[in-house]
Image (cartoon, rainbow, N blue to C red; front, side):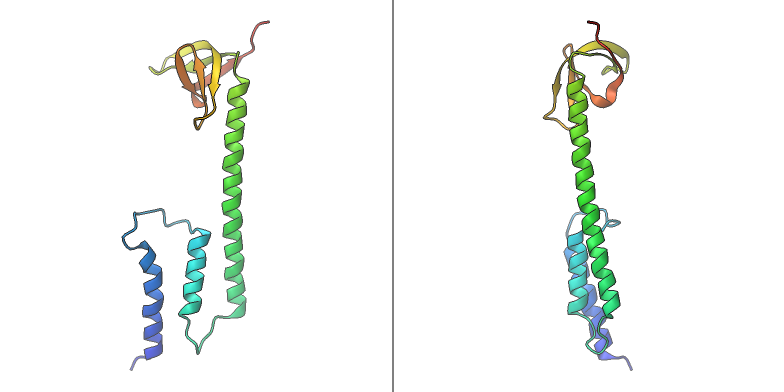
Length: 145
């Protein structure tokens, strides 16, 4: 004979976890956001077996994991912001310099950077009548005075 409490617990636990993903567009499930982690933790607490409550040390480990996930998300955002700032600084420092770059046909060309457009991500450089991405720059030359 099966234990009705255990069977109810399994069904209740499976439902809240599966519900948020049903009908949602497919996403990368290899990374768990802090919001999803917290939802899972709350669902686990809500549907736990009253005769077998969650071990305090296990709960503290899960809470610590949530804190780590939030810290990693904050670090990733800070790193992305720093990269963006660095790209803007790099682009603006090239104005007035002679650069060698790959043009739209894949050939190497040389020209003087007349402007940097920093409203795009990543920023682009105006060389002659072309807009060139930072990744296309091959060489930066010192300008002759």
